[in-house]
Length: 292
Image (cartoon, rainbow, N blue to C red; front, side, top):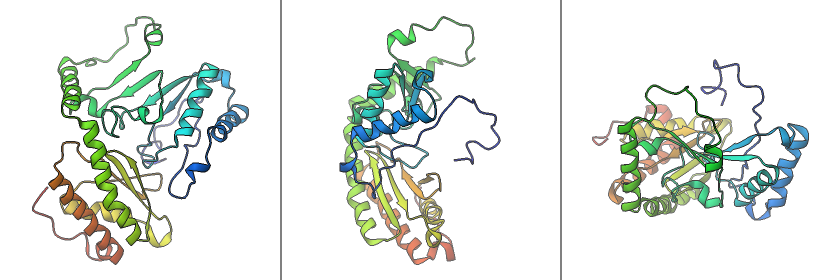
């Protein structure tokens, strides 16, 4: 998005190029998309936009976060990885939002057979404390010469200890498996909502990283915002995402109980009904729930 991520932050680096993500949502026939077809997209970019020998690395979110929780076809990622390997281009996976059990695997890259050269992590990594990390193959990480430029509080020992405890908790409590169960539980309800509400264009996601996309036309503009407002006033926090803010994203806690999750889904269901009836836009989101 231009706002709030670009406007006012110019100028940007001139030699950073952007390619379209594989927008393979409900209207896309995934079975018809082949690795060869996706390969042609990248080869075409090297012809028209930037020469391959001028590209140092490709940065990829395995599942788009702010972009709307799009899940690419496996063939798209396979084509990208193969072409980069053939041409000596590094693959950098941005797993800041998708990493650490969020999608049902420790890292979302695993769903696609992606083996990145560098891995970017943060958010869940610190277990609530500020921490980010760059992890990579030894021949890359060891190649950089020692330097004197760094952050004053980088590598905070308390945050690092929290990260170790977080990883141990994920493994000990089987939270990757729990994320998959939460995703299945959500989809069982959400696919029914899609059948009942014509303004729902798509339900998608991996594990505990799920989204509901609303139809984008004049009649249904702003519905995602109405649903998020209804949910907030009834004790459930969800956020809008996507270029046009027409996607409601859900990042449910992996330690949520089944009863709590069902209660949250009930709020979502009531919210969708209220949005369709126009009750949220006309009368507000209703009274605040006693729970939060």
